Image (spheres, rainbow, N blue to C red):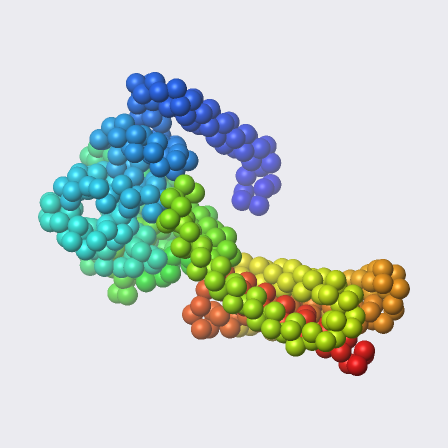
Length: 467
């Protein structure tokens, strides 16, 4: 069996189905792009509005700015809200900034509360107030409940569209109650059981409801061993819970245990994707919402800041090298071999930093195992340092016909790889305690440390030896 409970055959079938669906979607997008290039806008409009919202949004994000406005104007009014909801934050705000409050409010119709809250929280307060004022009382009240909570918490993720039932009811009554609805909320896999004070007491799975004796009560058939999600739980922890427990949806409660709403897997997938984008882009000092086709004068200043920080650290490393200028002039081979020591330390440190940042993101790293991880990384640094120090020592000695150079670079490399492993393990733990994102600042600090230690150890040992 597959780890998630599916057989290998079922898993292969699922993967093939996903691949075929993605291929079909991509073919449609390619046809639409070709029609757009040829100027046949009637075909473009027809195909664009026939795409699922996610594919239409993908096409907008994959188009240069001048085509984006053409495509956006071709999207029919009833589709605009769903497409807008699938866009990246930066592009969504770009389109919304050109709209009146009444237009924004009309786009929100049909979207889930958490999606509307996310969109409105990105708009200026004036526009948000106008949009809320234009809504009817019931929609406004539901939306304001969600907007009370930060968007990176369970409260910001939740949707208030839930179906609740009481424990004394029979399953037959529950079925008749469900049939009175024109439709039930998407991704409803459980009915939420509450008491008269709206406090959560359990879940009744739909699969249980459909196959059980209709005369049985909800109390007899419901699951009571399910822990609801606290409204202030960080979204990263919510995502880990969904991943571990294979949830499709989960109830959200306040401190008194009262039901506030539920979180569904589609919102959790967005959190996982955003966290992955954040970690990946932060390594380069970029925003996870960086637009691939953003104008030059918008992207250049963002990158300039990080380049300036990197330049400062480069000057620090250059200052260290300058301290040993006389030694380098005596032994030219040192200048040739210096980058090897710094580069090996940088790679080793980045490997350790990446492992620790990932472990922290997955919730694997805690106070009880931090020292074990640090010791493990240092041992890896010692072993790899010894191995590659030997290789570099032999190669350098043969290259420059000087075994002293080989011994010096070998010692420097061992020192730098051990230091890199230690700093790469300790740095993210320190930054987390200081409430600094290790994915954003860790690589710059680590590179500076490994460069400085590498140069000091290599050139310092050479100075002592050749003085």
